[in-house]
Length: 214
Image 1 (cartoon, helix red, strand yellow):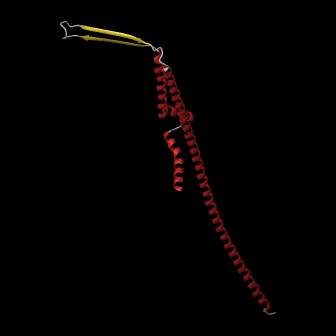
Image 2 (image 1 turned 30 degrees about the vertical axis):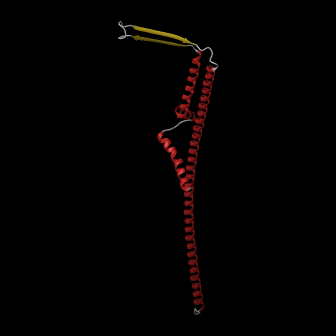
Image 3 (image 1 turned 90 degrees about the vertical axis):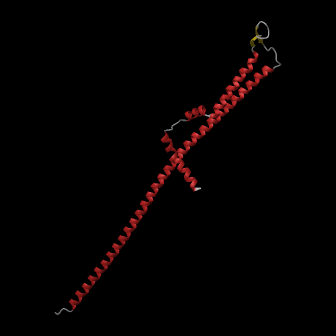
């Protein structure tokens, strides 16, 4: 658990470094534009829309007259005494007057296919925009989280330094107190010794005054 959390923190902290190294700087609109332009799913759905649009034109073509033309040439060489070449040509115009609603229904089916392909394309674009927007703001949140983690680490280092200084100050105060206590004890001992010497001197002076002859 802690290893995974540590790896996530390291990845978040290292992500801005890679982005800066590559020089990537995109706004949300630019990211969405690039995604809609280069996304494979969007491109495939756009081709499906074009195909459905061409299907409408193909179905509507049955309403117009069609022209057919043909030509041929045949040779009877070797079959008769005289070689005879025959040329044939024909042309025709065809116009559907009534087909039982088949043409109209084919056009409607093509239009429905076009609308369906367009709806799928719009949905794919919306999904792409949503994914890009979510990824964009996720990256922003990750960068903000990385900055907060850096600030927390910086504050933690400062607190550690302050605590180390406080501990060092307490040690110095303790040493100072111990030295002052030793000095006060030494001073008190020296004062006691001086008082004792003065008392001894006073006693010796009193004794000499008492035994001095008149």
